[in-house]
Image 1 (cartoon, rainbow, N blue to C red):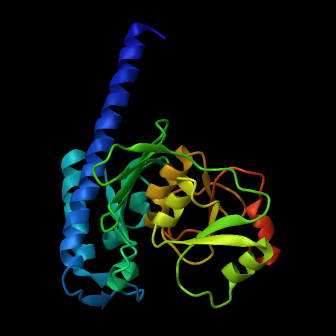
Image 2: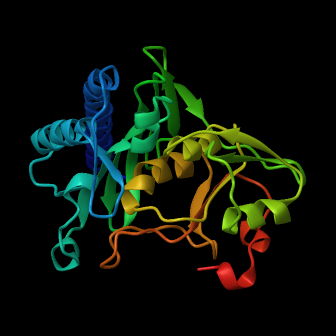
Length: 283
């Protein structure tokens, strides 16, 4: 590579690194605003899909949109709270921001602390930058394509994270703390056999896999693209994968619906996680 090409490549890396630093800061600012609402009485309304909505969701959404527009005025932004953009328009987007301003609103309402701000940069259907910030827990995860995955506790020095290799038996499963009431996940866990559980809310379950505290997170229920976009870059840069139940990597903005298929988040190892599903229940 010529010195001129080297210089151009270095400039691109520097610009992306500056952008990542800015997005981490934006997520933390939004997190502070969320905590202001968290410490007061939470008023809850319902959206058209019967999911809960609070003033914290809307306040974080406003902050993130404003600051992302300042950072990159030419890039479109798709957030959970402004998701009515038709596919005919979205289909023209090559690169855009994908945001969940408050992932885990139910956890926020319960005051469990297990909620997060999720910001991803999507390019040609692939998550190339992701930040997951959990303000109540004081933890932030981030990654950028080709630069590894990182975790920061409070203001401590960030640490590189990576997935682990799942054992043949006795794997650790990340899942919510809600009681199991049958269904696909229960059958998946039954077929998995002996296993350990680590509980967490929101996209933080995926981050548990990324940092090697869990081997797999099976999401066998409805989610949307903003629930996974940021975490996918973090998991993949940590050496793991987020796939549908046929083991195909998740991709973004490829269809009219913004719903994800059922999916697995997993680290290294020889498990074919789809083997633990009923054949008829695979996507």
